Image (cartoon, rainbow, N blue to C red; front, top):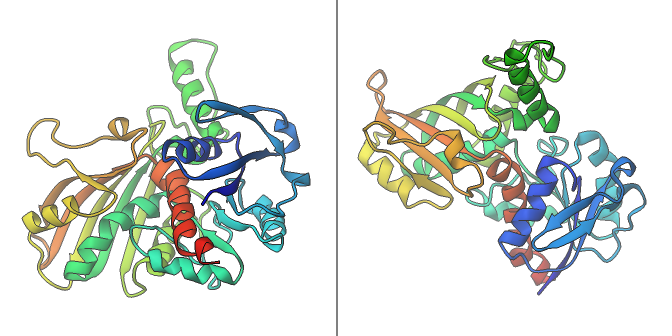
Length: 340
């Protein structure tokens, strides 16, 4: 069975990746629509070996379309997602708008695929935050084995998580350091990002955490287990693509590092590269363009009774956004649309 698929936000970083991954994974598409705002109307985007011109999201009629992948931000999603679902089209949304809506499933297919059946209410499925998505893929098989009590995570998030503007700012500031007269003041980020790190992603909340840190806590509880306690520090780093995370995990039961390594190696969506030698680990540059979430530096934490440390790296435009959305579409096709 083939599906009529619309991609909203097709000219952005994530929208382009959605089109690429739909083609790469040979998702059964009978018809594709690339949608954007009027300012980008007519822009050409790639879909496999084809070139598609973008249509106007504002005037698009979703009637008769099966699935819409949204990469347009919360404000635009608030306007266009209900329009799509009223027309009978299922929406997979990459924004934060519906993630904590109890009537909307928040899904990472390797972790909670059964939640897809809850999408029949509003007709919307939420894609998690990029930093959450890769983390819960790593946590799920370990939680199934030894029950996670607490997680301490520090993230090292690339500028592509802030969109094209973030990537441009890193590029321009880097050039400006070396070329007199081309200095670039911060505009997308709060401080200089070139040759710097910024411990601030999204808005500050009353308790001193940032919204990005809160998202990781709330989304992990919704996707994986509400009893898990998690604390996060989210940091923007001068990397173009690829989010990294240092995870400290405390379990209810003892889990040996060798067994953990074996469990992760056999788990879906993960690739373990963990050699205790020079270069025996994965960095963000090496994961760009890959589907897998990579795990390295697995070791016991001797400071707590049942603790492990590990390093987790993934292409945030892929598993953190576009790939996860396409995997949800695949799941939706198998589990819901084909059932009627």
